[in-house]
Length: 278
Length: 174
Image 1 (cartoon, rainbow over the protein chains, first blue to last red):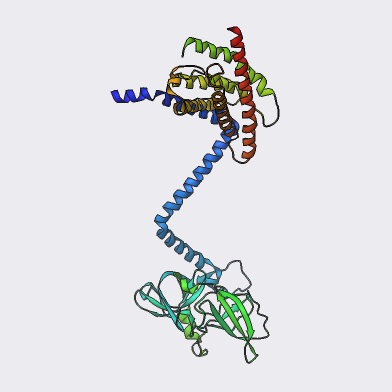
Image 2: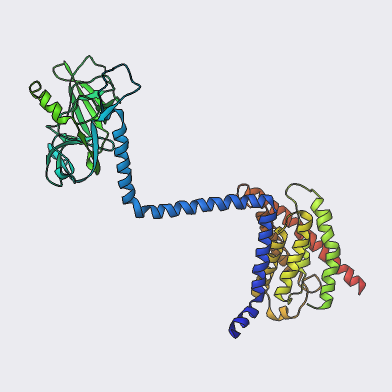
């Protein structure tokens, strides 16, 4: 106590200095409108920065939960799109009261293994038959088509990557051309090819390539990529089209598995008539 | 502080503060010249004055100027800071024996060169803090620095002029 008093007495002038400066600054920022406005602007800016910084730090702690929530929300939104519904209305001209059943539903999954360097590439996801995954379901990354499920176990599934010689999918180009076939020539994992398109179509570089409603395992308008290069095939009848994939297959991580509710029905219906699968 | 010093301070203050707030502040020389001559009051305080006394004197001197220029806190803050700098300056660059002599810095008691340097440093520092705090923005800091340059130059000149003229009157009286 004695020491404290002595300390205070010895440094009295410093305390006085501090107090006087604080009084002056308080007066300055309180009674001068210019300084007051600067104080408020700066204070709110600093406050905002601090909050942002704090959020930036704290945000990391629940990234996982956030991710999960976003994935769930994504699925909800995806399922809500009209392309996922099959409309039964016999009244074709009445669009007001459209009632449908969900045709496509989505399951989020993580890619646990992925190959890109072979001619027949596959990737493995962490969902299996126990969660309702079955052979023939489509798989898409958030940015576009990724592959098709070919094999399932209880907890895992293997999907045929779009980078696979055996992969076939009917594309639509620029919302107009609705046939041909997307395949991969096994060279560059950034590009796939479309063939069997007649050369009288005016396909241009940069046109969008997406899925059609013909594909049983993908809803309409899921992006595949963009036309990168168009040239005539050797026989002169068809076009060779290079498509730059919208999904970076080398960085595949979160994917959605797409379930078509009517797949069995369609399969059994079409079986006698379509020998070649898409 | 001795009674004679108080008397001297008050005698200065009675004509210097009105001169500052009523005349010099309204001169409108140009947009860069706002010399603060009244800091002479603080610069000529005795060198061995108690710190707390000098802080209080500085605070109330600045407060008086603030009252007349509608800038509460601005001059009082800068004055107290100036006295603090003066104290730091004396502690580091001045002979201890000389400090104990208790003289007030002017042409009678100090070397002219020392006095000029002392007034110049204090004046530039004071104007720099004052105008920086007044503008509180680095957007037009070039203008602020020009104001500091012109104002402090004029203030140094005026302060030295006043001190010099006071010296002659004192020698005349004696």
